[in-house]
Amino acid sequence: MQLTDEFIRNEGHRADCYRFLSACYSYSIQDLKDEGLKNLIASLQPVCGEAVSFARDMDEALASAEVLSLKVDHSALFIGPFKLISPPYGSAYLEEGRAVMGGTTVDAIKFYKSAGVEMDPQQKDIPDHIAVELE
Image 1: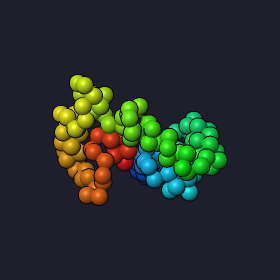
Image 2 (image 1 turned 180 degrees about the vertical axis):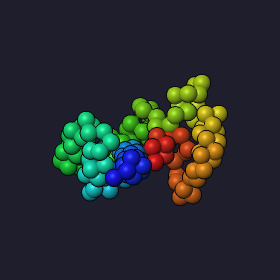
Image 3 (image 1 turned 90 degrees about the vertical axis):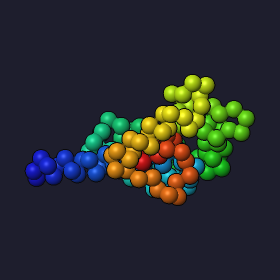
Image 4 (image 1 turned 45 degrees about the vertical axis):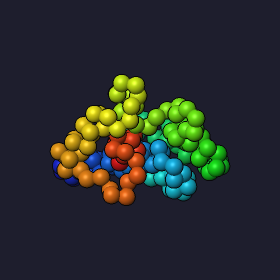
C-alpha cells in the first residue's frame, strides 16, 4: 500500500472519529447507545490506539445507563433549565459576559465558508456548538 493510500484511509478514520465524538454531545442518545461508540472504537484503533480503552469504558457505561437518565444529565449540563453548567458553545467562553452568537460565532461561520464547508440547513445548533464543530 502506498503512503498516500494509507494517509487517505487514516484521514477517513479520523473524520469518522470526529463525527462519532460529535454524537456524544447530541441529545439523540439512543443512536449513540445503538451503535455510535462501537463505530468510534473501530475508527480510533488506527489513528489513536491509546484512546480505544477509554472509548470501551464509555461504551460499557453507556450500555448500562438508562436513556432518560442520560437525557436528564445532558439537559442539566448543556441546556439548562436554570443555570447552564457547561455551555456547548465556543462563544460562551470566548465572548465577554459569556455571550452567545457574538463575533467569535461569526468568525466560525466565515471559517467554515472559507474552507468550503456548508452547514446542514436542518442543523438546529448554532455554528460554534461543539457538536457542530466536531462534525
